Amino acid sequence: MSVTSAPRDGPHPPWSIAPTLRGQSWSFMIGSGLFALGSAPWLGDQLGTVGANVAFFVGAWFFTAGAFIQLALSGPYRSEAPGHIGLRAAWLAAAVQLLGTLLFNISTGAALHSQSVRAERLDVWVPNAEGSVAFLISACIAMIPMLRDGQYWRPTSPGWLSTWFNMLGSIAFGVSSVGAIILTNGELLNATLASAGTFVGALFFLATSGVMLPTAHTGRHA
Image (cartoon, rainbow, N blue to C red; front, side):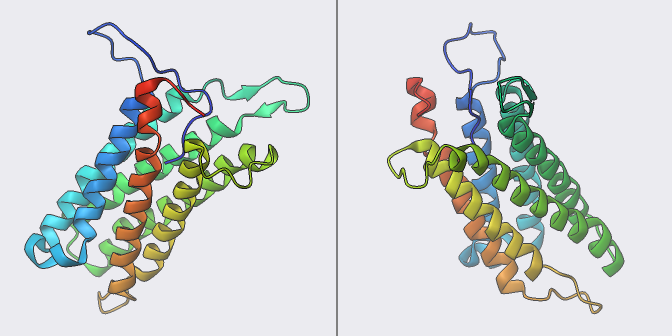
């Protein structure tokens, strides 16, 4: 859940529904928390498959809400700056990430009612894998401006930390999708890897927005 390069946060009238970095951060944090809850190894027996799938389904919608806000905050899709004419990395990363969250909506929704191995493969795993790929692509695009500016090591910068946490979370979700490959007998290729990847990725995504939340409240975006 990468941060935008030009978030428009600040005071709004009580009736305003204008997108803010604060709203983006909380949406992603709640979604990440629900994914962590659904994949936490010590809660699996208590929640059961249905409970975990419900947590993933609701969490995916919070992801999508955050992604919509992020896209709204990312600014114009094109840059006319000399030497940088074309699609802006912040906008493209947000757009690709939104696509990924929509694919997770499809996957988690299908998981609530799939009754066959074929349905689990086509309706659950395929959009899950595609969403994970979209997250990875988005994370890579989000890193381009930072690396282009030579920001290789800035651990005191919330934006730098958020970008790297986002990358690590995307990698973990990618690993999870590999473990979640559905075999012909309906079993997962590696259920432990699938759950662990989701849990670790969710924690990294929680940290991605968590480190930006103080800047949303203070108006700083460094």
